Image (cartoon, rainbow, N blue to C red; front, side, top):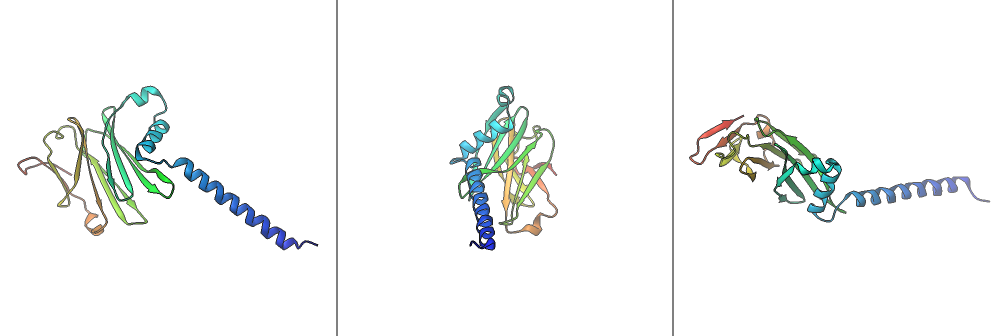
Length: 181
């Protein structure tokens, strides 16, 4: 006769393996082999209509380690999407949408690595004259999408305590501060 405990154990083990198998298939399905393919999937899922996709303007790309960041224009605003390379390919990790008018920034902390991503839009009124951006005295990277839109970003995993009170200076070509927050 068959032991009921063994049957239950085999049944539970089968359920766990089926669940793990389906989770792996789902992860593979949402991942992409390239960053461009992942970006296209993101655009098609986020901007469902053709008229919404027509508002997407210039884009740039920035890669570091297992991450890729793509800032892009949407109408008169700037968006940023971050992808992370996983075991099965590239998938979306973070999305931000900001106005191109005022002074603002966003941050995201990767809990696994402790890395901080700070980013913001260069305000439209100073975008053409901004040549450098310093975040707490450290140079940030600038990505110009065109002559009217640009973003800055900085990754940091060393001085986390230095980012409690953030001071951002927008600097022109003769090292004058033309904007700050």
